[in-house]
Amino acid sequence: MKKNNAVYLIVLAALLPVLLLRDYTPSNELRYLSIVDEALREGSFFAFTNQGVPYADKPPLYFWAIMLGKWLFGGHCMAFLSLFSLIPAFVITRVMDRWTAGALSEQTRNTGRWMMLSCGLFLGMMIILRQDMLMCMFIVLALRSFYRMLTGEGSLRREQLLFPLYVFLAIFSKGPVGILVPLVGTIVYLLLTRRIRTIGRYWGWRTWGILLLLCGAWFGCVYAEGGADYLNNLLFHQTLDRAVNAFHHEEPFYFYAVSIWYSMFPWSLLAIGTIAVALWRGVMRTEQQRFFLTIAAVTFVMLSAISSKIDVYLLPAFPFIVYLTLLVSPDLRWNRWQAAAVAVPAVVLVLALPAVIVLARMEDTRFVGQVLFYVAAAILSAAGVTALYRLYGRRQLDVAIRTIACGLFAAVFVGGWALPKINGEIGYGELCRTSMQVAAQRNLSGYCVCGVSRPEGMDVYLGEDVRIVSWEEITSGELHGTVLMLPVRSLDELKKNAPAAEVCDVVGRYAVVVLS
Image 1 (cartoon, helix red, strand yellow):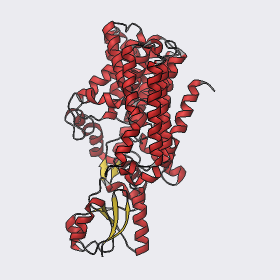
Image 2: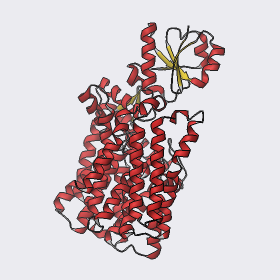
Image 3: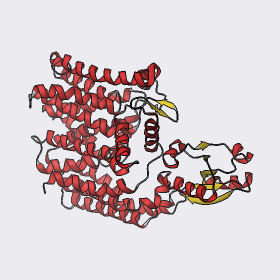
């Protein structure tokens, strides 16, 4: 088996328990499923609603994938939906790997695969159901097509068709960032390399014609289904308003300058330090190095200037940062400061087992005290110790990097099998199933919640809307005959205000209660 294929198979095997056994998170995943269920009931494919309220926040491509999964399996299947995060991550890594094949040795490329797939937030987005990894894949493919046209690789006509198609699919996956990163990044690079006069070769009538045709068809369908207000919301409120004066996720301009250190862990010190030293020494000499640097820098600066910010928005810069690190650090030979940049995350891994022991004794995190979590933490600690030995005992920087990455995935594999025992802490699936059992046993109808975060998506499990109630409604007696879900910490207050309340079960942080 070739090494480049082995990495992907190993990572797939390591993530399988998580992809198969975990529950949907309420914040985004469950909401997406609820939106899709609502769209299927209403027969909508371009204009969506969330609990009856227009939802123009996201383009339809990812929702179509969820719809396809429900049509194929008769319900929402985590393993199927995870493919739309996992496969794009593999494609991104594969494209970057082949892109740098002429500049890097096979050993360094193998190290790069492990670095990319284990890079903090990138690894997280391989598991979480979001549109970001899909958009990132199309951005990388678009930039690869641009670079092939720039350097004369392959068929020019083919790339001139693929380039706008990839850009459109990036927009169709997530939104305007899908065009901003390729557009601004490539124009800045042409300006810096004094080739701006060739811009028509890449952003000429063919590119804009294809983009306008595809976007026009999309917007026409949106107008037909959702009307002018929905289209205005999609084109302006969700783009210009977010960029200038965000109504969601507003953060200061320096947000990514802070978040990048933990979102790219365990490779942030190594990557940023290597690139900084390369700039200081003036070793950015090749076209490929300069192009990767430009894309990474432009993405960082541009997204910092946009008002709405969360960690994951910076994802399109990650592949270029990681592979630029490899390009300016030939074969990752051992030296003191690079060794220190890898030693720091190795030490953090060494502390994993003690950290889990402490967390398991704390009230709010007692759920981590599972045997398999202890084993996973021990694997991380062992990987950290081994990496330190490889660094300072054998001076093998690349082996130390792969050791840390392999340790991370081994820990994810082992810990993933314990997820069914803590799914009650992750999502609402077990809580809703328990509530449905109580309702069936007691011949009750209707479900309500109090103090539960983002409960709207519970309709995915319950098959009906859940009612959000206040303490006044609970104590008024009008909820007789319904099932109430609320945090366990609120039970003492409940007993004071509603002495007849009966606690039927406890699931994770929440209790299932019947009010008599």
